[in-house]
Length: 379
Image (cartoon, rainbow, N blue to C red; front, top):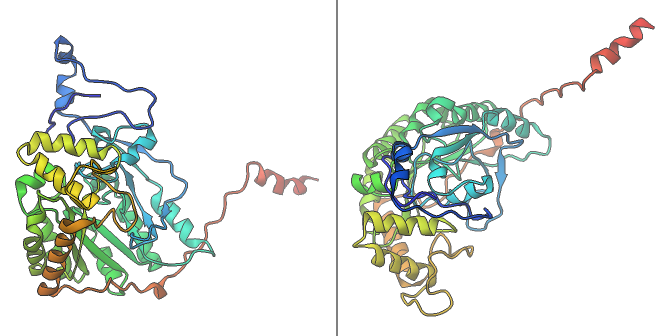
């Protein structure tokens, strides 16, 4: 484990061992040993491995998730958002949810091909796919890998509906494909705007697009004719919750037609990473922010009781909304602002009737099959 420190362009301050690892490592005291790795630690590089997935459509039956199926082109995310609920998924790879999650990425180069095969199955029933539900499909590596674009090309070919959530201006590179789908009510994009404060955004989400660029992205999509909404997420009590109304007003002025919001979630290792980050960047707010998160998670500001120290509640219906007076106040403020600004309340209605099942690819013949077919000619 590296000792807590700040790396340029990275969100986390440490690289704790994964929760499934049998051994734990601790930081060494600063000493002459530091000289060999000092430069590497200051500028940790991003590497991209290959995820040899055999399928790409993930399913969930969570009652508080508005989609059943999703496709994730990448594992890990270079945006480095310190609060990211997907960080603990890197533990299943034997990696850390800290710096590893931001720097050791895995791409699925066969994602489009596998998706096409899955859509071709006779049993496949069309409903909207969520693209990038776990990690951002337009994180910086997409500029070179172009896996998200390849997936969208399959969806255009099959007239399959898709919903996208991103905090990257990179989505505009695929504006042509999204407009093609949007003409037939087959595409909707949500742009996540966590804050309008560029300094807070730089610390929270170091490699994501700036707040100004995200608002520009909303406007560019809306002007092009692609339905677009804004996610004021995550709401972090005591840190960015005072911006609810300002973010909604700015996004509405740029053309966002729908709006959503979720409370910050700190599962597993994310709790320690976030607390560490708060102490480094906002030490004067640390206890206030943590106290408000506890109140939203436990329904009370008191630390007493069996769950008083909890910073996350995994219970369905609670984990994304919170409980108690403060969480209720956040929801009320959001709903009032959404109504006042004229955002549409109903979810976007995708047209699933336009789906065209692709032809199934012929399975390759087993080894030696050609030779067996030729044998009768020589009898």
